[in-house]
Every structure is written in structure tokens, then in C-alpha cells.
Length: 408
Image (tube, rainbow, N blue to C red):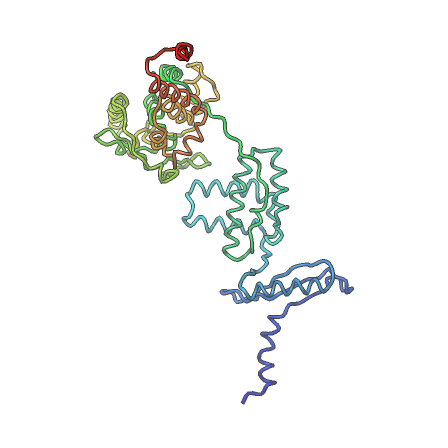
């Protein structure tokens, strides 16, 4: 039989690990108290992990807090309090995200947000000290310098990273979920009217990218989708298929072809006979240019390309071609090339096209999004709807209310 003393000696180390330490930080018997609770060993390094927390007040209060942590530990609810600083954690999180769970352009944006806003302000804060108030103070400070939209994007990055910290059991909860965000500010949308579209195209007629602008207006494609089109994306039936986007990196020197923004953005759009004829002329002209350039032409199969076959840069397209056309057409300089997409949707809705058709053309995830974005068109649609129902109700009758009530 085992000696009871031997058994006790064997389990003493285990009991010691399980027991919480209550340490008087000042050594005067009045606290504040350091509550130190063993949580287990790291599964890989085998190092002992502890929950360390300072409690102000009586020793009894510290002991009660220690018991709360022990109960959570035994239930598997408590995680180790990390001494990792936010800047180091963000680097680790971004490296993890860079393994393929984020699109390259999104990863680049997350990295920039971390470097520009999060690390300078919160980088030295330990994760365990990152309380909601600390985050709120950052957002409140930024509110005087940047837009609400940017703050909400910063929050999305920070909250996503801390959500992962909870999954990794570095934090017990995500402190970013308990802060107030500035109200969304709807970005001003400048859609040009049907008459203005004609003015724009008249001014663009002699421009080398005239057909590109025609395609943007008719299809409602995003510029990055248009610049990522291949010649093979147009089939013999006259249908254009959107399958990729062209993304230039922020260094301006390199690019890649990315996936479409959403699943619905991968779509097919029938082209009008007029636009098809223009595209046939464009492809013939491009083919002749390829032959003239010979080996100097780096053909990537792009529908719209530079003189050497390389992808077009959206920034150069805007500055050298789009803006001068706006000026020539006497249109507002505030109009963005992206607004040609908005113009397509606005004109179609005003002409009575079904919102579902417009949503599919734009690649929106739902018709609700389309109606929300283009809510400014709804009053005119409602007026048109009233006229249509009135025509069905009253037809061509023009009887006045007086003649109708005459026999009463």
C-alpha cells in the first residue's frame, strides 16, 4: 500500500500550481493586491501560464477575485493574460492573414491602417491593458482629423484582429466591441444625366480611350473590373463576362489581377450592337498595333492596354484623359471616373428599368443595396408609378369632380 505521506508529497506540486497567490504589492498589508492564478502549461513550449491581475481594496476582495478566476479556469473559460504589446500582436496577426485568408490588396490596406493609425497610438499598450476606454479615446482623438468612414475602417481592422486574439485564447473578450463609432457619412454621389452623358462622349470622341469610357457607362463596371478585362471575356454572342479586377499596388510600380469584389460581381452583361461595333473596331486597331510593335508588345490578352501591351494605370487614365474630357464638356471637376458607374445605374432606374436588373448589372449582392445606394432616384420612380396606376384607373377620362358629383 502507498504511504499517505508519499501520496501527499506527490500531489503537492500539482496543488501548488492550482492554488492562487495573493501578493501585497507594497508589503504593508493593505494592498493593492496582485492576484496570480496558474492556468496551465503552453501546449507547445510547456511553459507555465498565469493570470495576473491587480485588485484594489481588501485582501478578502482579492481572494474572492482569485476564486472567480479559478472557477473560470476549471470551466475552461479563462485565458492567459498576455504581456504581448499590440504592435507585436498586429504583426503576428497580419502574417497569419497573409497566408491566403485575405486578398492581397485587402492585406495591404490592413497593413497600412495598422502602421498609420494603430501602432503609433496603441502599439506600446499590452493586449491585457487594451480596454474599451483606451480604444474610445483613440477614435475620439481621430475624429477631429479624419473622416467617420476612415475611423470605421480602422475599427474594422482592430476589431477583426482582437476577435482573432479571442479565438487564440490570448484575450477572454474583444474590447473593441464595446466602443461607440461615429455615424456613417454617405459619400456624395455625382451621377451625370442622359444629356450630360452625350456631352461627355462628344468631348471624348477624339480621345484614344473613347471606347473604354463608352463601356464604363453602358455596363456600369467598376474601373478596376474594366481594366482587368481580357479580349477572351467577350464571346461571339456579344456578352461580356466580368471575372477579375486589375489592382495596382500602392507603390505604383507593380500590379496583380485579383478576384472580383463579391461573388455577385462575377457576372455576364449583354452588350448593345452599337458598343459591340465599337469594340470590333477597337480590337482590329489593337491587333494592328501588336503587329507593328512585334516583340516589343508584351501581350497579356488585355482588352484595354497601353502601347506596349501593359495594363493601364487608373490614376494616369484619370489625370491624362478623364479630367480633361470633363473640362472640355464643361462638367464638374468633382465627378470621378467611378461615377460613370453611378450614372449607368441612375439613368437605367430613371428610365424605368427594374431594380433587380440594375443590381445584377452592377454586381450588387442584393437589390436592397441598389435601392439604398440610389435612393435619390426613388421619388421620381414613385411619381412615375403614380402616373401609371392613374392611367390604369382613369384611362383617358377627364371628368371633373364637379361633373361626377352633379347627380348627388
